Amino acid sequence: MIFIGSDHGGLEMKEELVKVLASRHQPVKDCGTTNGESVDYPDFAEKVAGAVSRGEAELGILVCGTGIGMSIVANKFPGVRAALATDEFMAQMAKEHNNANILVLGGRVLSVELATKMVNVWLDTAYEGGRHQLRLDKISQVEAAVRSGEL
Ligand code: RB5
Image (cartoon, rainbow, N blue to C red; front, side):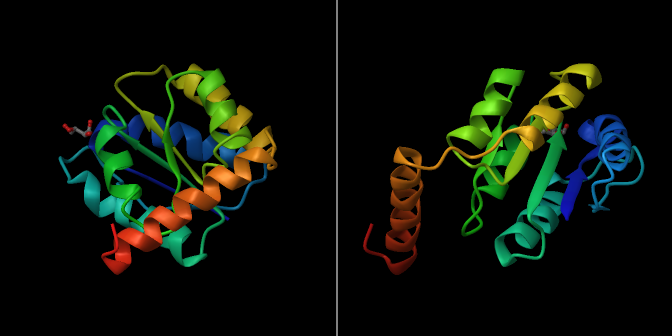
């Protein structure tokens, strides 16, 4: 299951990406926002990143104006690796090297066409593991050390 969410700045792109996911027969839960009214991106980042962190969602997609605010919030959640990507190469690497479980996009930065390609490449790319897993393990260690006050 993929959870997807946006604020008003990412609404249009999010709506299009919901259609892209549906056309891939990908189970998707749309966490809003649902209209163009100004809202606060942390409220939607929390829904998607929280679900990924708790294991309720396998993957997530977040869209705000730039993607920056959503990334900042999403990466506060344990186990979340949210990647703000701006091109297809970054989307591919986000999965291949970082095993990013949330893809973050800027609705005011990218065209819907490019965002669609990026979502497709992110979903179609496999995590490479190997040396990259050692690095992801280090991220987990940093996370645990920060939580325990050791860092
Ligand atoms: C909302 O105007 C805008 O600040 C938000 O969508 C996002 O770009 C924040 O990082």
